[in-house]
Length: 119
Image (cartoon, rainbow, N blue to C red; front, side, top):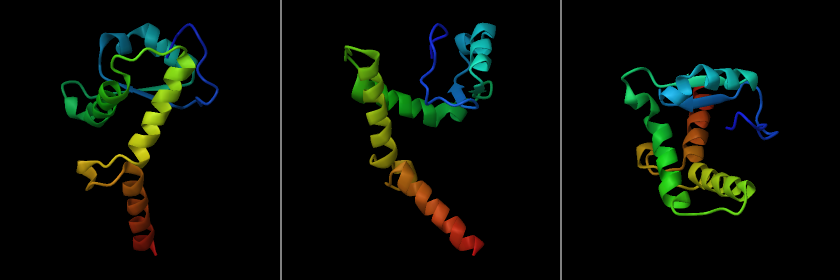
């Protein structure tokens, strides 16, 4: 997110920006910028790196698999690449921690189980 430019129009107020407890994210300027966009800050608990492990895994995979060493002609090209990766990661990539199904398959199965249990 850039403090000097607007967020994409698809970014809705109330969005959550999850980060580690780095000084740049804890700074008053960053927090003020988030508030200006109507966003909320979410950080790991102090001294508990496991809070952020799934997020760090996602970003690590994105950086290593799709972005490392790449140069993009435009910001739009970079954004399109990231959206493509996130779509793949959530809908197709099999996750060992989820029993070798995609996050979306896992969520659908969980929701179906909740609905069966409620019926």
